[in-house]
Image (cartoon, rainbow over all chains, first blue to last red):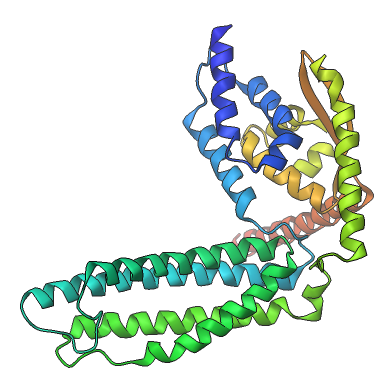
Length: 246
Length: 100
């Protein structure tokens, strides 16, 4: 019996990867399925089923919740995820450049215009800004995938800011830069432009008339109505389930 | 596969897993995570709905069934697979005939 309690606890821990709302709605049911599928005397969740649950939970948190018929929104979200991947790659290139920069500086040479004087503070700020950029992409992908109108507006603002930065991507590396550094440098610039294009395309898709239908304008009567219906559903389902606890 | 499992009446989660294993001749073993991601998607697309809920041994069982849209999707998908399979068989027969 304690084996079973152990196993159930293990499964519960894995279910924590799922979004809270989904867990409240389906958690008990999934747990029942997991326990029904367990082998006799099994004490811990298997590796493969753990991986499957974690993947399911993470995917459920990240994936767009707008219906599949919202093709333009789905495509835009995919582009934004691609932008996140590209900007993460850019961040890695940037880190490589910083390392090269520090090495060269240690030898007393400088890469012309570079990360100023390689002060730890400057480098830290640069890394934080880079990480914030990647998180912004991920955040936008998620919020737009959920059909939030503010996310659609914020996407435009971020895109405009990125456009202002675009000029910076075309500055030249210093004259002391070796071949490898030059490649890295232009690689980084190209990635920035690619990410910018992906962002631009995503913003364009998000504001197509086909997308607008899936974005709920805040405070509109329709959104209010939907919220009411959701609340009613929740009440109904909680009442339907309450006998279980008795 | 999941739609097929629901084609002759409502099923609960574990029932679907067993059914899919049987339909596939033991090749497809659905895991709970995969199953519920799929069920969630199918529900969002209104291809299936919750039929009823039961409590068995203190555990919640939710039964799902196909909606008319789900039946339509399954029929279309089955027809597509059949067309692909018969095209393959026709060509194999043709190739076999030429080889002999």
